[in-house]
Each structure stands twice: as C-alpha cells, then as structure tokens.
Image (cartoon, rainbow, N blue to C red; front, side):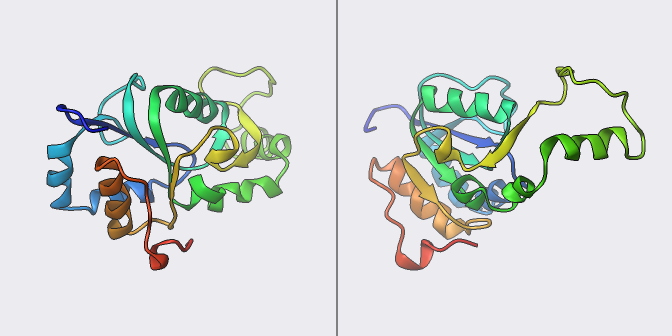
Length: 182
C-alpha cells in the first residue's frame, strides 16, 4: 500500500449496535493522525450513499443478518483490498446472532402481525424492510476476511494497533491481551 496518495479507508455497519464505531471515534486525537494518512471514503459517520471502488482497507462492524447486509458485504469484498472483521458481532455473530434461537417467520409474525400497530399480512417483500436471513452469521461465513479486531466493543488502543499496522502495510498482530473477546 505504499503510495504517494492517502490510503482509502472505509467503515461499514451491518447488524450490530454501533459500539465499534463509537470506540473508533474514541481514538480522539489519533483521528487527526489517521486523517493525515487516510481518506475516509465510506462510513456511517460520513454522508456517502454507495460503497466506492478501490478501497484499501475496510473495517466491517456487525453480523450479517439480512439481505442488505449480505449484498453490502459482497460489495465490500469485491471493492476492498483488505477487509477487517471489526468487533465481536462481525467476528463471531455475538449478540446479533441470539436471533438464531428464534424462528424467523414466527418472529416477524409476532412483531408485525400480532403485535401492537399491526401491519397487514402479506408475504411479498415491501422493498423497505430488508428480508431477514434464516440465520445471522459472522462476516467470514459470507466473504473472505483478512484480519480480525475482537472486542465488544474493541477498545481504542486495540483499534489503533490494528489500523496503524494496516496503514503501514503490515499484518495485524495484536498483543496477547488484545486478542480476547467480550
């Protein structure tokens, strides 16, 4: 990745709580150092609607829970040189995958047809709410992942250790105390 121009960095938010992005913002003054080395080309904290081409590094937060997540994950892999599972939901499925204990059809019926504020029954996708996948899965089960940053959420020191290595063109080698989950 050694080039004269800045690294093209993206962050993506799939099925999760956004805690990883909050920890990313907790890099504080290191965000200024990051801005000197990288251009943020896509992120939920930036107003970009379409995932761009030619991204050097993409941090993906969250598990893959619906068809929109699956489509975006596939775009990320096709358009990124390095894809990083960012946080425990992306790495293991974590809290988001607790839905796997429930029947998806039953869940949707109870919430949308039987619950308060009922929605008319109908099995056709409405184009607004993405269809749920039968199971919530970690990112590496749908695309190739190049590195992992565990934690729920990962603390800023762990994020910085991984991101600074990637920006330097080095593999992510987290210290032993940074490799735990939770």
